[in-house]
Amino acid sequence: MNSFYERIGWVIEKLFKERLPEYYETLAFHFKNGNSIDKAVHYLMRSGEKSLRRYSVDESHQSYQEAFAILTNKKNEAKEYGELLIKLIVDWAMVYYYRGDFNGLIGLFASQEDIAESLDDKSTLGMFHALLGLALYFRGMTKDSCRYLLKAYEIGRTLNDFRLAGYASAWLACACSDLGRSDEAIKYGSRAREYSERCIIGHRQKVVKSTANSAYRDTFEKVDNPDKIRQTDDSESLSRQPRNPEPLLSVKTDGVFILNEIQTKLVQGG
Image 1 (spheres, rainbow, N blue to C red):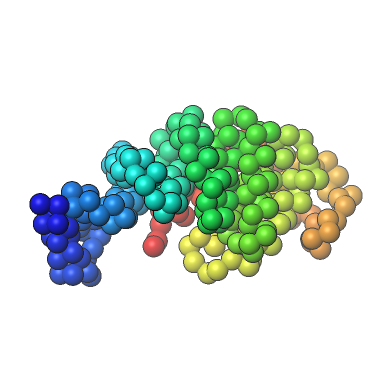
Image 2 (cartoon, one colour):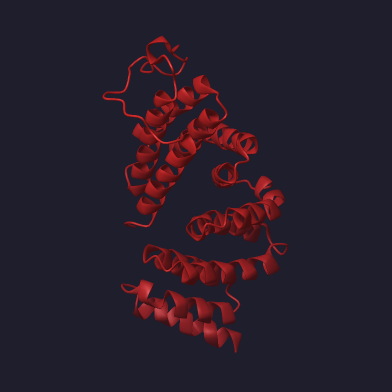
C-alpha cells in the first residue's frame, strides 16, 4: 500500500510538472503515506512557503508543523534527516515572526541546538544562529542576541557567505546600538552595507540591502558626534555623514520596521 501512494506521487509530479505548486499538498499527502520522507517534507515546506506568500500564516504553520513531526520521528535514523530538520526550522522562523511568537521560536531553536551544532553545512548553522539571535533581540535578551549573531557573522565571513554575513552584521548593528556600543554598531552597519553589495543578485540580495541600509542609517543617527567617528579597518566610508538626518524612533522600534521590510521581501517573488 505504501508503494501505491508513492507511485501516485511520482505520476502527479510527471503529469503536472509545470503546475506543481497547485499540487504541493496532494504530493505531500501521497509521499508521506508512501514513507518517502524527503519528498514529503520537501512538499510540506513548499506548501508552507506558498501559504506564507499569501499571508495564510496558520496554514503555513500547519504545513511546517506536519513536516517537523515527521522529521523529529526520523532524525536519529540518518544524519541527513538532522540536516533537513534544521533547514526546516530555519525556513519556519518567518512564520513564527508573523505569529509574533518569539518565545515559541526561541524554544523551538533551543530544542534543536545540539543537532544544529553538529551540522557539516555551516551556512545553515549560521542562519540558525542568526535567526535565534534575532528572536532573542526581540525578546529584549540583547546580550544573548549579540552572542549568537556574532557566531553567525563569523561563519558568514569565514565562508564568504555574503547573505549570511549581511544579515548577521545588520542585526548586530541594531543590537549593539541598543547596548550603547555605538562604535561596534557603526562598524557592523557598515559591514552589512558592504556585504549587501557583494551578494548574489536576487530577491534575497534586496533583503540584505534593505536591512543593511536601515541599520547603517540607524547607527549613524545614534551617535552624538558623527564627524569624529573613527574609521574601522574594513571600511573606508564611515566618516561620511548621512544626508538630511531626521530624528528616528528608538532602535527597538526601528528594528521592528527593518523586520517588516525583511518579511515583505521574503514573501515576494520566487
